[in-house]
Amino acid sequence: MSKITNQLNTQLENNMTEPIIKDEKVNRWFTGYEIADDVRVIRSELLDLHVGLGDVVLVCLPNTAAYPVITQALWEVGAVMHPIAATTPEKELQQELAEHDYVASIVGQELVDAVLDDRIAIVTALHIQTYPLLHIIRDRNLMGHDAAVPTESDLALIMNTSGTTGKPKRVGLTHELLLNAVEHDIESHKMTESDTTMIVMPMFHINAQAVSVLSTRLSGGKVVITEKFSASKFWNQVRDNGVTWVSVVPTIINILLINQNSLSAYTDDIKLRFVRCSSFALPLDKLMAFQSKFHTIILEGYGMTETASQCTINPFDAPKVGSAGKAFKTDVEIMIDGRIIKETNRIGEIVVRGDHVISDYLDSHHESFQDDWFLTGDLGYLDNDGYLFVKGRQKDIINHGGEKVAPAQVENSLSQLNFIEEVSVIGTPDTLYGEAVTAVVITCGAQDEELERRKIMAHAKKTLANYEQPTRIFFVQDYPRNATGKVIRLKLREQVMSALVGKGA
Image (tube, rainbow, N blue to C red; front, side, top):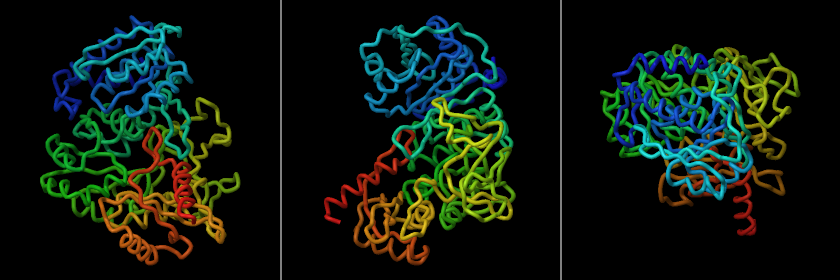
């Protein structure tokens, strides 16, 4: 077995009678023995179905305690796991299966027919402790391989990126890349066997897979898995399970600060060691309010699927608000016009390299790499102390009358308003300025849109430069999102433009 798989087995062996993974949906803890037994059952079935070294298996399940079981079983026979969102529409699921060679798929009862879709296959129903009725669908049109011990350079995990286009790129992570990333996470977050983390992020995403599940298991800690984030349940789940840290995105921070059910459930006996937050920078007032209200610290960081999790993290002893922290076991630089610059406080493209960073996508995109650097497509700068500040995606920059506007800058400002649950800023065509700074807003509930529009404009005037202030504001119920939940800005722009045409703007 690979080194990372051996360490996962060691954790089980050291905790045979101890509860180590909990599934909140069924309100049950599973011991090391129970997890190991489920791994054995799935591994045995994979061997019978001739699923082995290098075979790619699609996994489409909601957050469940079966996720780490399936991961480990697949790695023990040398297979590769490709998890996707349980909410993937049937047509998209079938398209995914048609485009790539999946020797098998692992799904719940509700997706069996969609996966079969006239496919010649063997369907096996498994009753395991962590998932009452699991289905392994073996495609008989594809040859499998014998089970074998994978090398460290063999693929372990395939994950879709969460980019802004409609079709994500496929990232292949080897056993070695994952192990290196996880070891860095453990060290930077000071994880120990005393820690218990809670998963509220989707488990088909790198954040939950590497930062939370694998890092916690390899450090000897415990994992609590929720089906999804619930503001009303969050603090009770943290308290009842002795959770010591949790990884979230800024939207969750905002919701916890304003949701009345959440606020009433919090009590001072809750002891979170820290909350890890990534995706985009939190406004200063939100960060300070959360830390003060809930008596913990927020550690902001920067990472992506292509780096098997994080590249930077704010140090416990010296966090810098608004930054994504300092590079940790990663080379992080700024590139302008194809050249690494040494000047500080100058915005350019963020480029990274390290022992946990991919060298290409599975479907090659050479333009994303230069020498041994991965070109992230994100804009940012390094300050005099080496802290990284992320300003947004290079392709999302708005050209407003010759001025370059970073959407993240505007989003961070507007998200300070309590009635805003989420905001996305895009550029839309403007005859005078080329592009208009357009804020597309999701509010926390039914409000007076005209009053809110005035509040947004007043706040923007106080906190943003003239050219950064939104000149168009739209209110929506939700955004078009890709499989990983990220906003598809191109489609959002198309929707807004259609609305503008409808209004004759």
